[in-house]
Image (cartoon, rainbow, N blue to C red):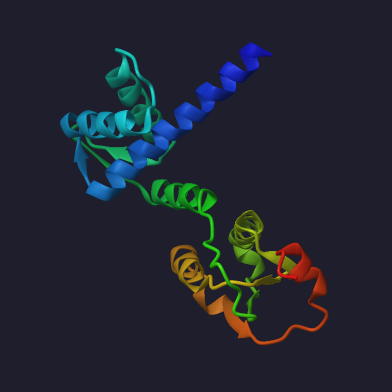
Length: 188
């Protein structure tokens, strides 16, 4: 049991380290190998990740793995994120995202409707997953409701995933039979 827990902790730390490397390089745009380790080391200390003598080795190894996975490009001197690396970083950021809830409900529903074509099925499934994870409630396959403002994150999603023309955001004063939704969101 302890070995399984330790293995899970290592996987989480590895993912956190890879996310940190991607984030550092994406923020800087392009980062030379000499600058990568000091920047990531500072962030690692801040977040309490990997606290031993082999930190630079772990960073180098993780960066190499990100290059092999096609998430980073390395030309022998500098690292820069690839499109798939930027996409993965956005997914990680959205996965960790939590919508803010104001203290008082304004008694309006936010309804999101989308009709994403079949050739973008992966994006459609990703949006459903992100909505579910963020706490939105599904009314129908492509209709979701939330009681608080979420326009900012939706705009970001639409832009990053390239589905702006397929998604509608509605602010609704009244929803028929919304008792179950009010119960789900503790608004009664």
